[in-house]
Amino acid sequence: MRQKSWALKGELVLSCNCTVFCPCVLSLGNHPPTEGYCQTWAGFRIDKGHYDDVDLSGINLGLIMEIPGYMSRGNWTAGLFLDERASIYAEKAIGKIFSGKAGGTTGLLDILVGQFLGIERAPISYEVKDGTRIFQIPKIIDGAVTPIPGKETGEDTVITNSQYWIASEIIVAKSDKSRMRAFGRNWNFAGRSAEICKLDWRGP
Image 1: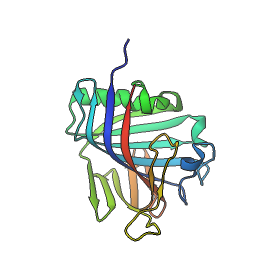
Image 2: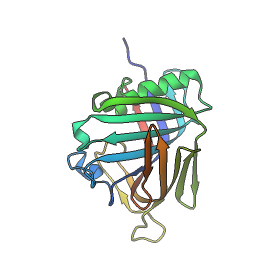
Image 3: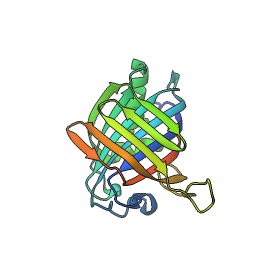
């Protein structure tokens, strides 16, 4: 069966339990997280997107992941939160993309994710205030992530030309606040590693 064309454009913010900037970005998953395991949540703002003829523009998403060791060795656990405004067709499309079944940028998730916790619908907000990304799912995720200032005034610290699967350019950041309570988890990563990336994923 022919895989369908898809694309997501926008921005994502990610907060994890690493005590310093996530080594997975530079090692491409071949160095363990600073705590020996990874717990992370990510927020997505899809400005423009589609899966075949299903419009995904204007949808926000939340993702949680647990990785027991080296990112490259798999056995990930993942769960999704979908904007309550999304159609049932959008839900099915997002499920295919984030399971890796749609191929392309997220195709590796089909190999690396061993347990999928499901998709939950919720009101989701993604805002930018004075450079800080504020991501909220009521009673589930309460996050605020601020870029680390660079040497040049008004510019962020940025990793460029990376082979990191999420994005080739990553803004180095830190979580001002980072609470996540869902799927039997209770996390608080305030003061720890965070990333901000342009979302430009596609497939197959």
